[in-house]
Amino acid sequence: MRIPVPYRRRPVSPCPGVIDITEPTTIDLGAAKNRLTSLWETPSSLWGELATIDHKKIGKRYLVTAVMFLVIGGIEALLLRLQLSAADLDVLKPETYNQLFSMHGITMIFWYAAPILAGFGNYLVPLMLGARDMALPRLNAFSYWAFLFSGLFFYGGFLVGQMPEAGWFAYLPATGKDFSPDMGMEFYALGLIFLTVSTTAGAINFLLTIFRLRAPGMSIDRMPLFMYSTMTTSVLVVLALPALTAACLFLLLDRNWGTHFFNASQGGSPLLWQHVFWFFGHPWVYIVFLPATGMVSTILPVFCRRPIVGYTYVALATVLTGVVGFGVWVHHMFASGMDQLSMSIFSAASMTISIFSTVQVFAWLATLWGSWPVINTSMLFVLGFIASFILGGLNGVVTAAIPFDWQLTDTYFVVSHLHYVLVGANLFPVMAAFYYWLPKMTGRMMNETAGRWSFWTMFVGFNVAFFPMHLLGLAGMPRRIYVYSEAMGWGTLNLTVTIGAFLFAAGLAISLINFLYSSRRGAMAGLDPWHADTLE
Image (cartoon, rainbow, N blue to C red; front, side, top):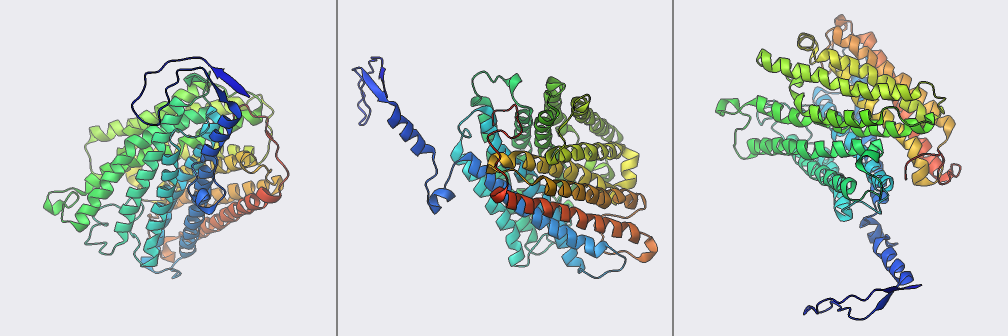
């Protein structure tokens, strides 16, 4: 089919190759379509697959890579729990325990929790917006490869026996040359610098895509709530990650070139690391949480068969969570010694931010109220998320109270809160998203029976593993210890935690096997198996 193009005179260009259209012409739609297809399709070769800029393939790679890091971090956690399952055990040496402890936290926080959400974002954002691809497809591909190689570089420390031993937030002076003389912290700092480059590039790409490539008629107040959470998260990344990059750079300079940003004996301050790190660190909590709430706000109305209650309030609460999230970092430092006024301000901000999460929870509960929800595996994980998030939020509010924090900081109470928030509020929505969107990605339905077994095993294991940590914290068990005596009376609770951890891991393994098997042999899904209301 050929379409005439109106006559339009252009000035003659002296540049070779520029056509001067001075006569009416026509466009061959078939040829134009073929050319457009050839520009966007992935060549059927190994190099073509590696060099692809297709957002769907890049999104799948993010998901697969992040799940691999999840498995690695989970294995590290199980080894830690074996060591702590009873008093006076010698399963791991102290140095090995410290290394596995650090690697577990770093892996889960940096190489699983945020990248898994970036994977869903890469796959879904253009589809939900009605766009062909991300705004900057090549930058998108660069973001993935930088993420992958940052993780490989970080784990390269295993090959040379040089791993960080000072925990995932790397407090000074424990990470200085005096106490960490090997190269483990170099792998930590450089790996995170590479990762921040990847994550920042991806966030800029998300913002450009959301602001510039929405379908006609999709105004900012008509976007899916997942777009609001992705947009807010991307702003947080752009503003917060430079602090982490600077902190890691300062640490490298102190360790290798004689500067003294954090050396108190030479005019520096170890507290500077804490301020800079947590200025990034607490927004990072919302970076790994807000997209998960956006996925819940997308999935829940589909299975309730009604629009989400309070769309505007949920969108506003999402944005305000990001704004206030920059004003709460000091609650990680209440025990470090600060003036009362500063601590009071940050304590109030830490309690205030819970209001916005509460708005979202009430919106989800109101959407459930009076509906007849379809109870399938995806919906079960959504309900499990809501339950665990409420409990994690409640024990977070009490730790914002300064006297309570002084008593329980650096105990297992805080470990419990951390896992209820980061596992319950990240992994459960991620599992719901896998069961909801994998039929779209693979064309096949996941096995529902295996999914239900996985959910109940994970949910029971999750609470058996992490709820007793509250009691351990109240009983005085500190974080980061690798052994304890029987006289402390912590053995029974620690054994319970270990049993729960292995039960949780078994439930996760059921889902991973289900994903692999059903993606190839599951029932055909069709174009819209859930009768959803979003463009993808």
